[in-house]
Image (tube, rainbow, N blue to C red; front, side, top):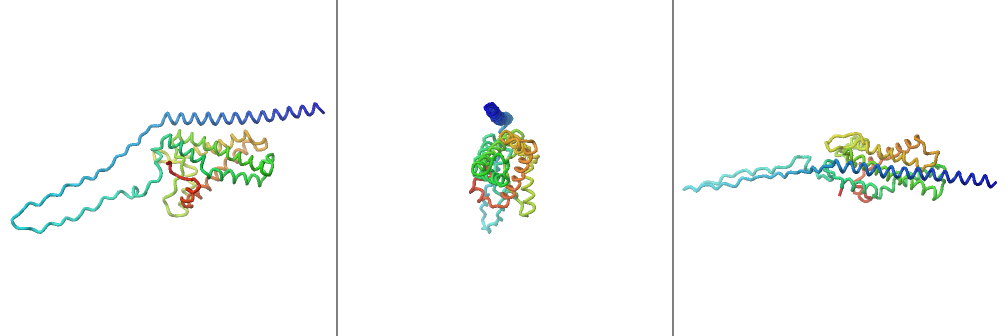
Length: 272
């Protein structure tokens, strides 16, 4: 009986040691990856913010020479005021991606991690996991919900960290920009496009590599603390795809809900 209890204790200690090792390895991977990406971004960053102010020159009025017989003054039609082009009339409420500095990207990253909305996703996901009893090893009650919520928060932090590093390296714009269209379908299409593609400094769009790397990278790294029943590649792909789908839903919500409500919960598209 004593021998069996000793074997059980030894097996449990090995199991806890294995989980601790996996969590430590995952943490080191995230820290090193973030530092490497930030270092590369800082090395390649060039500040090319040049702007020229247009100066409108006005010719001085010419005086009419004096003559012996008074003449009626010649009325000159006032020249119409020169208005800027239509696109520049709209107020630009976010800094162009070509002018984003590393400090700006740190600000965007900080807001993405610390905004109040960052608690909504993990809390909602933990509620679904609690309802599905997934994973069952975490149990029910407040303790089970707390473990699921902590898992969701950890995944989100890892996802935003990886996304920050990748976006800084390849020059992606990590922000969401609302559509300028008025049609419902065009705005919905824009929200989906903003999820799977990113704007670059050249004005074009590329696949959102930073979002894919952050979402699925966090899903696979989370295998370090998930039970063995949910620590497979299949479960990681499922978690990543679910997170990506939730990003589409959030962008649709962000597109059609007035911005004043998002500012109330700390969601903004600027870099101030």
